[in-house]
Length: 81
Image (cartoon, rainbow, N blue to C red; front, side, top):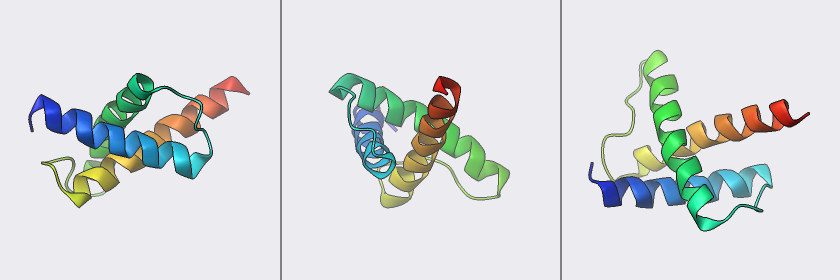
């Protein structure tokens, strides 16, 4: 996957995760970073369960990255409390 694909998938995943968690205060750059890091986390978590990770620009990759971003947001919220 190219750099532009990572940015687009990360941006979409970050937006979805922030919408689902009700945490929409972040800027564009932080949202993309959240999604890209979420893609790494989601790929790792999905591989533990025997599913594929982020493997291109498709719906599955966005779902995996969103799951990872949700995990990252949940960890961040737990650490703030």
